[in-house]
Length: 416
Ligand code: ADP
Ligand code: ASP
Ligand code: MG
Image (cartoon, rainbow, N blue to C red; front, top):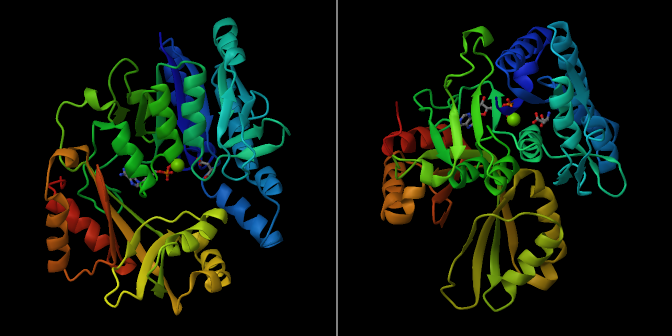
């Protein structure tokens, strides 16, 4: 007997038929003798609709009320799945974030989980063989008790946190693809499914744009050593042997991976904006004058490129921020123009960041150089580059994203 957490994303619970299908997946595990906690997302499209309603009501709105609204999607699915399970004769009870409770920070809209007490859930597994159906994405602030949400895609994080709290043997993330691929299979049909990915690589893939798992869920999995298994909810429940190994991807420690590639995957993100500050004075303290106010405004700066000035007087400085923060960043810079000292600001939002990831890069030279050549041959201009131990990223015109991803995917031998 194992204890499992099973998480189902929005497309997997998009309508009542799919919720019934999910119930059959859960019943399969329960019939095989496993204890199960199920974490559900809102039905596909629901969260977007709720977010839009908040924006319609007022462009600038109270983040606490935003959370009260957007957390509602998951409440509906948890109740519906409990009903569907009961209808199949499986004991089940729904749980909202406040009922468990899932205690979080007060960062409304992007709260972090602080603590979950899984005792009551475990007691019910034992005493009643009851399945816990938990609303993902939501928690409550530890001090005020107000509803919080964990950021878009946050049900993945709810699932991994619950798995750690109830000491589950595995956390299965059921989604609309049958695992983690070398890149988004919707963009590159020749992408390959990986059997195993190391936590570090998955962390990079997720934070650089592969939205198959929320970044924090991978962080939590790494810290608490939760075995995360990404698999498809569209496989027929009846066709799956609960004691066999289904197709999917295990996120695990690096040591468990026998065959290590130099490059494991390619991620991309179009949610980037580029800002160039022209003719800033080339003197000590300028970077602090620029990035200090941006940090205070909670704007994440990512790639930074600064030229060495030819005349020793002024230079250009280019960096990227999330597209959603672009206008705010510009405002902050304009209001500190006097302090920084620059001629003008240029910006672009039609840019994309493409990243190449692989633990093998630690011990291989020339991996990035190869990419620069291949992209040049395709006429793709690189606006900025950043590198770290196990990845490098390039900033390009958004129109070339797919071409760049496909080019790099074949270049590193990742095509199926
Ligand atoms: P869910 O609603 O189940 O949480 P998401 O839409 O959040 O599902 O995540 C699954 C999607 O992630 C897939 O449909 C796929 O298009 C996308 N994706 C991006 N990069 C990858 C990747 N490397 N491997 C698998 N899927 C990826
Ligand atoms: N429903 C939330 C979202 O769309 C959380 C999730 O699905 O993981 O972001
Ligand atoms: Mg998701």
